[in-house]
Image (cartoon, rainbow, N blue to C red; front, side, top):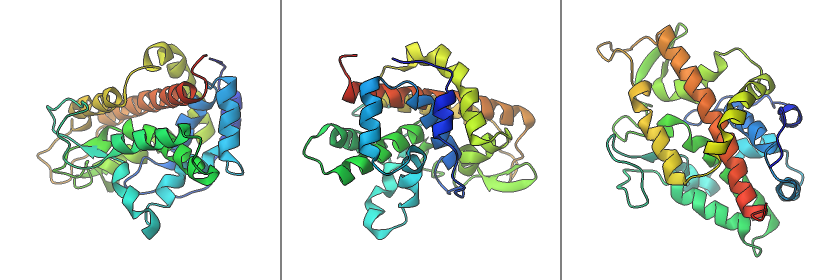
Length: 265
């Protein structure tokens, strides 16, 4: 596995000026995780990535699944981005899921990457979904509670503005770091370098269960208030967890593509 300081990766991911998308970990997060990923691909996987992308850029591909979600043709993918499960229910292959099918969708799209009979356009779309959904799986509220729709129904106050808990974790915490996307991606590299030996393994269920187990910190605010204010301590915890989860998502995206495209290495 090739390692570096992520400079080439960050250069590949010059941000497009796309607006934030409700109910989805934002473009900045997906691009930052892709920067962590791309420098960890084996040579064969790097070549395959370029071939599958064709005339797409990587930064466009990783946000494409959110951009098309509102179209009728892609309405069936709207529940691919999340799963709902009880607080005390570990994520396992036979766990009772209360909504969403991110794990099934990820497996389906991974299968399409490996299938030689799939048309180039379909394979490119499958790649976009794989890279996007791995990142979504690492956002704690994408493995959420059905009762509050993954935090969408919980209003909070942050930086003088009212938002909801899900949107706070989707992008507001990340953007509050005040870094450009490429600089934020570079800031994740030390985390990825230290954690990759442990993170580059495991199962989709295990990664989802990590998100579920973060709920005590995600919901650690004053519930007595109608619109709780987000404290500086909470915001800092959230920023640290966001950085860790994005570094993990990038390392694990590389793991999945390397496993599919260069298993001998």
